[in-house]
Image 1 (cartoon, chains in turn green, orange):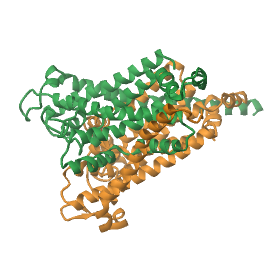
Image 2 (cartoon, each protein chain N blue to C red):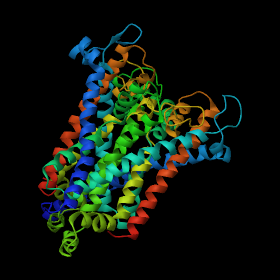
Image 3 (cartoon, helix red, strand yellow):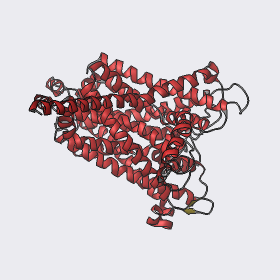
Image 4 (spheres, rainbow over the protein chains, first blue to last red):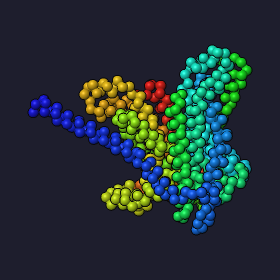
Length: 285
Length: 308
């Protein structure tokens, strides 16, 4: 065999290996997105049938009786998320501002570590914390406890995205503001934060979308309820918890509503993400 | 940009920002304290043996967390062993192979996987994945590989296999996103050097991209592990909820998160709640440590400029 023949043989083997390896990469990507396509298909195929006005306006009926809806669950989720945002968004944004604008202070390392570690705490542990903090002293489950748990999930999420968005603002903008004689706090709030408001809003929206799907922390804080919200100090229904309850039940009309509820949740999150992309693409920070 | 506060407005703002930011620190510390306080009766009664004891009997008041620790570790390990290779492959596809438009679309879809709520994964798992496993996959495995300890027992569908698969799907976006960053950070010069020496595309990827990214991939995996440890709902719905240790992948099991999700709302006696609190404390500590390690690895990565 000549030199050429040997190299030709090796080349053929390398070429084949190359083809196979690259095909595996493509195959892996297809496998990775298949679950998403399946879930979207199933959620729509099974959930669309139950989507009607009654779903949003009626209370659940006893098993066996036709009709009924999960209006209380949808309302409950809105209430819980709104309450969690009232506490969580200001704290989260301020923490993000502190991490970005006062990065060199001694406390900022501790704060950043806490934000990241808190973000990693399993949400059910946060539920236990809210239980110990609010449910036990109050001697009862409540929407307040549920939204407290959700707020604790929201804060690190919003803080991280706010910090990232603010870090993108170049220093010369801050220096220009200071050079014009503005006090630092005005530079931060009126220029840096105000200029990044679309990015911050996006981060908040993503956080809100995320907590509206959380179930575990609500299981023993807000618990669940079969009725419309009865005030912030009593148990309240929520879409994720109802989906969970219905999903593991043996009744068909309940599982049907679980699918419809899932469809609503999934499309809400999808919509929020697409909206975020549109906003960020429109405004290059 | 450092600058000492020179007027009242600045000082007030900084103090206010610090005050609100310290809420996060306080919450984290309080969680630890409350967990210890809640589980104190169980800590006193069982001590460290709680972790190795397998008895979990609320009726007879015997508690041991070994089945749940086992379940958490095995499901997470299995999930990672599927998700890490898959995520690396997807990340490589997105950074090296795919044209920009395709990468944007596929990348978005992978991120969407992360946005789907855990309950929806659980619901889909119950009605699609578990029946699929029960009807096709598990009987097949049982027929040809049933001699192995891994595939013993009846094919329920629900069980360790289903839970691990769904976990793998759920952590893939996290690992993929970080791997993408890591691979993107490899300077093009490395790639061009390999190609210039006559490497095929795959050889170039192997030599220039993968070889220099191991620590980044490791960091991504640890972060994925952190996410897997904390996953509750989908796992609870698919793991079968049996408080026993079993080596078979078909067998139902229980994780630390799922036992809490199942029993906490109705836990009767004080010692039951304390035992569940103890499980929560262990889970909290484990995820704390794992996330701490992940932070350290990612931080070291960013300092050295991503890669080696």
